[in-house]
Length: 265
Image (cartoon, one colour):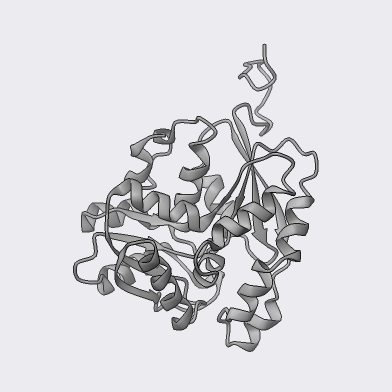
């Protein structure tokens, strides 16, 4: 029997994966990606985070909003390089960057450049960014007019950059703005986000894309799709869907987190 095959031994589950192990690159101040991925991931898939430094003092100086300098600090070298190198020889199959705004600010080819750099440190493991995942997810859903909603700790200017990023990728942007909710991860509740999106849906939007891997949002996907009749993706749902595909795992096993997963591998 191969080491990654399921083995019913009669022992209690111990969390060891038998299908795949995913490495997450996560800001050191963020608990969102691991929390949401743990809720969504199919059986036999485990998550293992390496944290990179995020300049939280910059965030505090900007009235609890992420400034561009903080995003560039993450994108421009040492924090991500150090975090991926810390995986070392760990039994990780693929690495996912759980950070959205680097895609917004980097201009043409930003994600490809990050992947190229991190791949040199990944010891042969594939690397996927959230930006790549969101664009691939929107393409798979065959939608063109997008409403982009970001966390309340994104300033409007950063969301506008996100809208421009979507436009460069060939999408029409119905709106691009931060959610009008209190800033801070502990202040976000799915019910509040659900009601805000229902009340602020941009006319003509064919899909909703929710940015920000630290934004507590996957819990609203199913309800919004049922009520609005359009697909909804989030940074974390798109990233998980995108990571499962090269691993050869059926995305349809992920239930209640959007029609994206029903599209399959």
